[in-house]
Image (cartoon, helix red, strand yellow):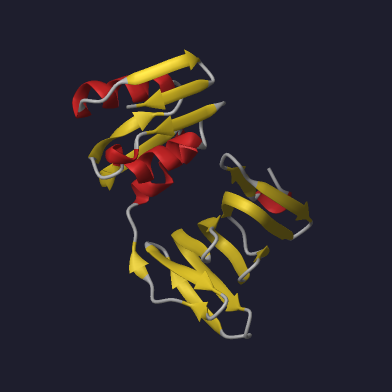
Length: 185
């Protein structure tokens, strides 16, 4: 919880600095809900966001910052001082060159907030890179598995179960030296 009824939720591998009415996203992903008129500012490497009466998810990537507005409106200021507004249901990539074109987004992308990871015809390699964030230890896989496709919603409270389920449906093996060292072949 933050001031004025606002709330902040952090995903795994996330670091933030929080001060009154200001949040600096150092790395990772956050979800910010601001119910009142008092605006909260989120600073990123690529610009800043002003959120009032809205719900936004911000994920800092190497190539930019993905801004997903669940409800309300978010004002985005890029590093060049250009200002744009994203509305509920829109997402766009904020880069050093400015804010990209908005696209509609699937709310299931924000499933991490409820402990769910969702994939829709996603490459297994991309899915595993995301799953890695939610499990301790080392997860490695054979490069030949990268292109297999995954669709489904998976509870993040048991990542070993997710790996075993994927192995049984996609036809690969899970080799565990320990719970903390797993290789997929």
